[in-house]
Length: 192
Ligand code: ADP
Image (cartoon, rainbow, N blue to C red):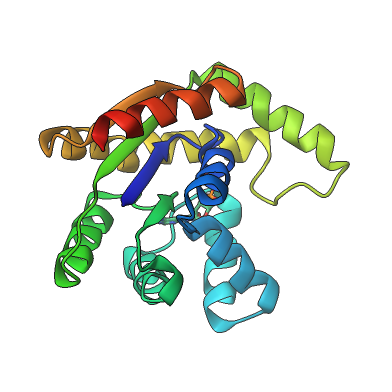
């Protein structure tokens, strides 16, 4: 099964993707994690992306499409994967559909975690406090505002894209983590 976890920054995609990975054996493919790993490793790609990510803008589509295709061809994705933070633009979604089609596969379901903007801001403030000063460079209230603006402009249109394909399911991302996990499980059972 190939799933997309969809939602605004801080909506809890990463948390739920990790749980799906543990419980269903579907690898979490997080472009944000992959890009941060490239920055930490000091690769050319990481150097190209750091300033863009720190500002909360999107890195170029071809960069993330390339790293996803490479990652998806690893043997652990034989039974599918959970895409987390990808796709984030219509061209990325089209590239993902094409990539899967080439491999005789498809996106089965897109699960949207719906969270109000005010709650997102609170979550980021909490994450900054808990990190004790070593927060992600893009975890500041100012950058979050830009990440949200980018989300509404570039990423939210994907909701319509997947709705048209009949693949969109929405769960309340403001419920406690365990309740969100249970809501996702219910959606998956219905789809199976
Ligand atoms: P969050 O969902 O918390 O905003 P991510 O870890 O998914 O954070 O992404 C962090 C940053 O990495 C984004 O703000 C963006 O700069 C870059 N990034 C991650 N995924 C993509 C993507 N699919 N397309 C373009 N940029 C991306």
